[in-house]
Length: 57
Image (cartoon, rainbow, N blue to C red):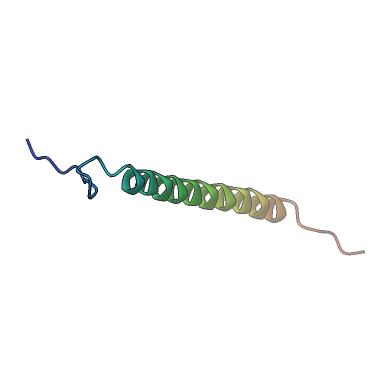
């Protein structure tokens, strides 16, 4: 089994590194989720305007 755990200068697990990695993963996940949500809303709004065109006065 590989031991890919990162250690600090005191030979303890580098918690700061792993916390920063968790923050990065969370930012990436939220960015992806927001992009998907915006795309879905745009799609719904685009379909509404196509199916219900505005009438000229």
